[in-house]
Image 1 (tube, rainbow, N blue to C red):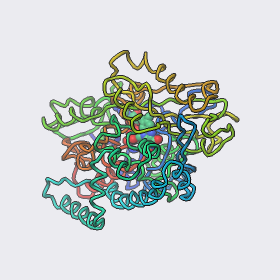
Image 2: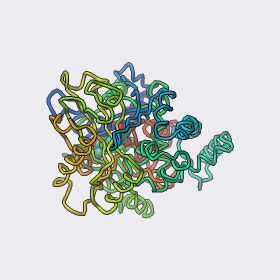
Image 3: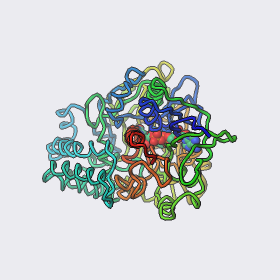
Image 4: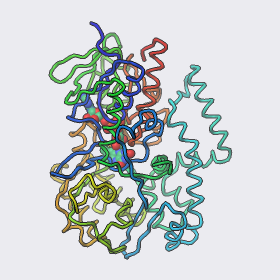
Amino acid sequence: MAHLYDAVIIGGGHNGLVTSAYLAAKTLRTLVLEQRPYVGGASVTEEPWPGYRVSTYAYVLSLLRREVVRDLNLKKHGLVVYPQDPPYFQPYPDGRHLMIYNDSAKTHEQIAKFSKRDADVFEEYETTLNRLAEFIEPLMMMTPPDPTSSKLSDLWSLLKMAKLARGLKKNLYDEVEVLVTSAKDFLDSWFESEELKALLCGQAVIGTLAGPRTPGTAYVLFHHVMGEVDGMRGCWGAVRGGMGQVSEAIASAARERGAEIRCDAPVEQILIRDGRATGVVLKGGEEIRARRVVSGVDPKNTFLRLMDPKTELPDDFHRQIERFRIEGSSIKVNYALGELPDFTALPGKKPGPQHKSTIDICPSLDYMERAYDEAKYGRWSSEPFVEAVIPTVYDDSIAPPGKHIMSVFAQFGPYELKEGTWDTEKEKFGDRVTEIITRQAPNFKNSVEHRQVVSPLDMERDFSLTRGNIFQGEMGLDQLFFMRPVPGYANYRTPVRALYMCGACTHPGGGVMGAPGYNAAREILDDVRRGRNG
Ligand SMILES: Cc1cc2nc3c(=O)[nH]c(=O)nc-3n(C[C@H](O)[C@H](O)[C@H](O)COP(=O)(O)OP(=O)(O)OC[C@H]3O[C@@H](n4cnc5c(N)ncnc54)[C@H](O)[C@@H]3O)c2cc1C
């Protein structure tokens, strides 16, 4: 049968869309198939209540690669990002607070309230992270080499890495420390103030089922400071129109380059003949033939549900996919508010710095560790780590006048609960989050006009995010770089010829970043140029 398409992409998450735009730009006839009525995956804007446009899942932007923004001209396609200033606000039970500003003198003053020594060292800490980021950044946009291979391309990439590592000189040891140590050990080596360490630690556990003492969490912290908004490294921003606008802008750029995007098109099977992907079958039976298939969905879905792994995969690869760690740990609680929270630690109901920043509720590393302990044993945290943003203080297009949206990301909530199910437990968890915020801002509970709780189970049901893991797979040491998603297959190819991967489960991992989609497109185009197929 004739091939209708040069490439069919399963899933219109932002990474699938990025891949489609780059393939279409090189005149490959490209089709994106998205099961939901709209594109975006975890990066969407939805309207749960009339007049409110809510970023249901992902809520802030920073990691989106500047190459993608530039190549796809996303600003022209409607992407507007408001940099957060100040970035962080953390209120404490005793009425004090810590604010991190973009201005270093103001930040120094804030940290000095807790430790003069930490205030003095903070700038050096940031400089060190920035220096390490300069090493890691090029790795993000590169295909990880297979260190066990003697292929020229792998050896060349290893050489490039060695050159980058040499450039770090003695800082290489800091780099290794960041990669392997726990967030607590890493932060203890810099600071003495529990408050500052707790504030910085939030980024180390986001999206992971791990506590501050878990080895490898320092890297997750680092992963989250890798981004930028308008050239400001580590800065996060609110997207005008919500996170769906990132995906819509990429989709618009992809269409302009000739890609076709079909929504309400769930893929049920990947067609494979003699070890080679030849197309897909949609729910309802429609067959779509293609020279290559690119999966933007997680490995469990791709290899265990969209094909028969026993007949189509080598045994060792099948085992690796079965073992791939993909545990959920995060719950989203989205609120519509009649007024802004009036924090005891920094009073005021008019938009102030406390409302413009990311609000973290986590007074100490031990608080965070205890929250994780409960999840380890199958319970949702009774005192969860709470991170909140109020995008309406930047963007007047997403809520009725005078109203606000608060987007809360809370941990921990394991996918599998010892008692009850998420259907019976999620509103109880939502009540708990409301209480935790009300402890810091007494007007909060009464200001809530609508609430939506999204559990790991909901994420799995909503857009097939296996077990609700927000990164399509744990970002642990064993699942990063040349081991993401599994060792030997970090180059976006798979054991099935002409079947590629392009989602967050591939290097460099999760976040609204576009890097996996960009790297996958480069590898596919390289195969096309060489007349190969995966
Ligand atoms: C609750 C939550 C909060 C987050 N917060 C942030 C944040 O603030 N900032 C940030 O940078 N990152 C955040 N992340 C992470 C980030 O959003 C994701 O890592 C990223 O969006 C993944 O994009 P993706 O394109 O790789 O995959 P996904 O977004 O998972 O997209 C996969 C797509 O495939 C579709 N699909 C699945 N199966 C099929 C099928 N059989 N047929 C057709 N289509 C299919 C799905 O519907 C989905 O649209 C968050 C994620 C979640 C879940």
